[in-house]
Amino acid sequence: MSALFRKVGGMSRGDRLVNDFLTQMDAYYASPASGFYDNAISRRYYEQKLRHLKFTPYPNDGLVTFGASGTNLCDRQLVFKNDKATRPEKSDDIPFRGRQRRLGTAVVDYIQLDIVHMPKRLGKGALFTMAERKNTDMFGNVTFEWDFEEAAQERKVFEYPHPETGELVQFAITAKPDGKFDYAPDGSRIIFEYKTKASGLRAMNGKLDYKGAQDDHVRQVTAEAIIFGINEALIVYESTQKPAWFSDEERTSVTKGQKTWADGQPRPDLRAFYVEITDDMKNALLSDLARQAALVYEQRAGGAVPDVTIEMTDSCGFCAFSGHCKATLTAENKTVLKRQESAMAASSMAGKAEHRNLTTYLEGVSA
Image (tube, rainbow, N blue to C red):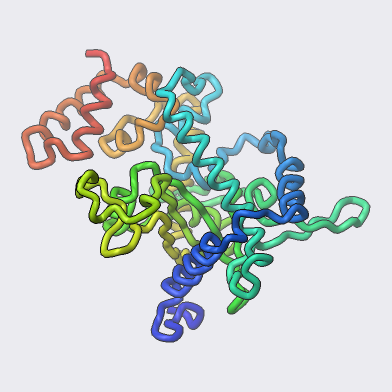
């Protein structure tokens, strides 16, 4: 462990950053002043949002471009996404899902607005402040913007060896993080990603206690570390369910599984996780992206679409090419999957997540 990440005052670097961040957030939202926005700060924030309210296409260089938040696509989904002849499926969804997506976007917008207010509201208590970037136009005029989302977006081209053939593969990564923090105690720069969870307080905390930050979110900040050269990140989760306004521990009308307070305290609705992005993590991600990019180039040259595997069915619920994927499944691939499903049904895997995902996928496949 490098000197930068040694324990400070008995607390690890990661634990200290998490503690300092959550302490800052709690101090801001506990203050009555948090309900009032400064007009000048708000105006600057919204003017920046308006400046970047436009569509900017990627350069027409033919390269597969991975968004940092989309580095977890399965091989098949990635090929479909990069195939001009295959269109994403657009159909009506269950209404609450649309509202949930809108809620998630709105929460992140307001978190950013709150964070840029924190130096004024908390003074020296604001250890994490939104970093700013210096922009110089063609006339030499200098302006500053907060370093988040479209203002921070960068796209870089990479050439990396294929993990199996060793052949160099070109591809690009683009990233626009929810923010970059300046951490006052030592002047370091921290990547910031904010996620909302609709599963409820107990479910969110139980899953985070068991698994920590989600793997796809760790991949996202790893991609951002590659782009920006920042090797530390905070991934923060907020539950859209909040604890009861007053303790519900003693309320007999609230069942045990629905109680939002425990041991005299509200259950946490905000959790933060520190990630130190290592060279091994970067190389592993670049290697996997090189492998996936090669699949796209092979398909463009007339090659076959990758077969569906059990692992791929884990993310089918959020795929915009689900119908096309099932319609183009080869007879051989279908036979293999059905054989695997039968084996899982007769084993200790029966009814578990992997088995349920595969079963659900096969239900939409013609006999």
